[in-house]
Amino acid sequence: LGKIFNEIGLLTKGHLVEVERADLVGEFIGHTAQKTREMIKKSLGGIMFVDEA
Image 1 (cartoon, rainbow, N blue to C red):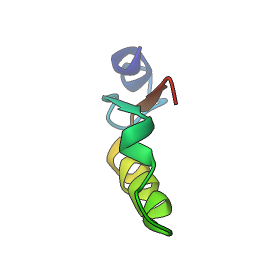
Image 2 (spheres, rainbow, N blue to C red):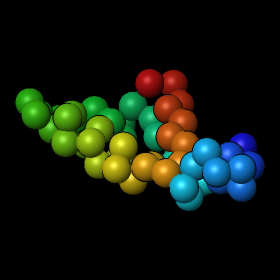
Image 3 (cartoon, rainbow, N blue to C red):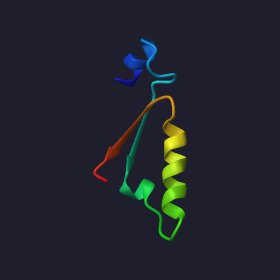
Image 4 (cartoon, one colour):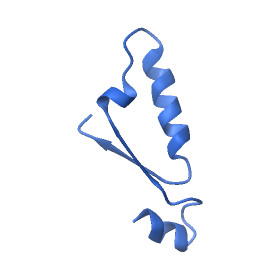
């Protein structure tokens, strides 16, 4: 789906980033925001699929 959206100009890259809860939630205060921000930046221009979070 990302590749199709890229081909028609809706996404700049069209890649897929699959994340789960452990990729987004940190172990200490403030770490969750940092981890989530990193994953969002990684998925910019594509699709971020959040699996069972």
